[in-house]
Image (cartoon, rainbow, N blue to C red; front, side, top):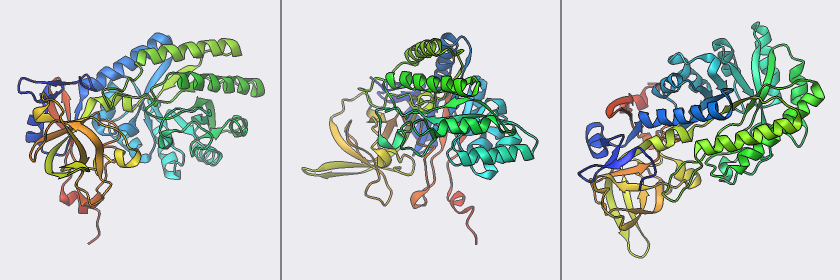
Length: 433
């Protein structure tokens, strides 16, 4: 019935998450409100961890892509679950440092890291820096040598894989701002340069073919292509790379009809492709890293709103306005991301209305979804938008000077605020008088 296992109905017919009544949560903490089920997050971490251990014999690491949802509480959870952490900015690294995340389990990504970010990574002892381009390689080498350090690196490679997803979230093809291309020979040239440098130690390669992918075949093909490149590196330089980072991009269920691949099935199939290719190309099986983000936190979250005006335009559409919008969820305006929504206080009733869920921002494109099936709604109802745990808080803004919502985390039914609601004072805090 629901897109996430942590959702349900109670005796009042209200929507629940983690066993808690969402209407009650909205009344206690106000709206808009992000709610996350910590138990669901931990279950996803455990599932990934167990799959990697089973199919790679313990020679692998699950690394959480923190860009999906980064705050102190999530970094602590990931650390406690024994996962690594993928960061892409100095801000994400600072958040990890603030909770003492083990630096050796941090992977620093990004296509245009600043000098200051690379210095911070070196000083904190970040375990792996994923180098994106030649300029970064030379800069990192210079910075490391000048500090008497050696940075362990992976190269980000574009494997040329079609991920069958939205153009904005396809990152493995040659026409991408990310990484080094195989077809042009620049990836091999980067390897040749790195081998002769004193400030870096090349440990392996990384790829990421896209996001919200439902097929297994693109991941299998990416593994085969990357291992083929690793075999070419061995033949040309004599160096056998130790690490293969296959990135993330695993799809989740945003709509009831979505059918994402189970983590276990993905791991089994890709592990088979790795084993076959290594045997055929004369390679030792490398240490495998995967980087799920959305699939760990996405299904564990929802956003609660209070309904405002209902505007019915005969023969056109019905607008249902809420007290949030593109400031707390810009994904529809960015790439028409689909969501399921419902009236939380009447969740047991049938969905009889088709509405456009509109935000409160002064922007005609401020929509959370169009042609959405929902229960009959009126002003004052609590509206729940499901599976918003990833890329909602992470992408939130203060457009129209609207404060960002708080995040409430549930653990065994107990609620706590992990990110407080912004105040008007927060909005002007950095303004000069």
